[in-house]
Image 1 (cartoon, rainbow, N blue to C red):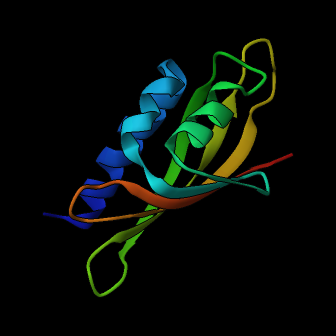
Image 2 (spheres, one colour; image 1 turned 30 degrees about the vertical axis):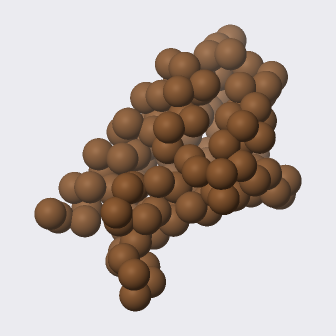
Image 3 (cartoon, helix red, strand yellow; image 1 turned 120 degrees about the vertical axis):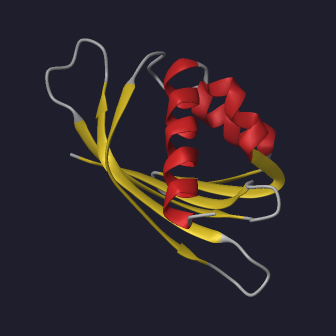
Length: 119
């Protein structure tokens, strides 16, 4: 399977869930998963989903500009780097963002990730 195609499919799925129902992102994380969101380290499925569902906006739309990936680790895995913009309701200007995720090949779960917005 083409790693770039897998990464693009994952990114489309992830941001579709984020934009429509963030609670459904739980299936993409594991208890050992860690997300650093704007500098805050969050570990575990419930904590990660709790953070994402408690953001001060209920609706948003991610517009993806780039998706880069590469193999990771001897046991198999994939690093995915995404850049794009985030449109919030009622806001004229989009926020630029980047996100990096590290995935396991065997089940596709997100092991680690970093998210950062740029103003």
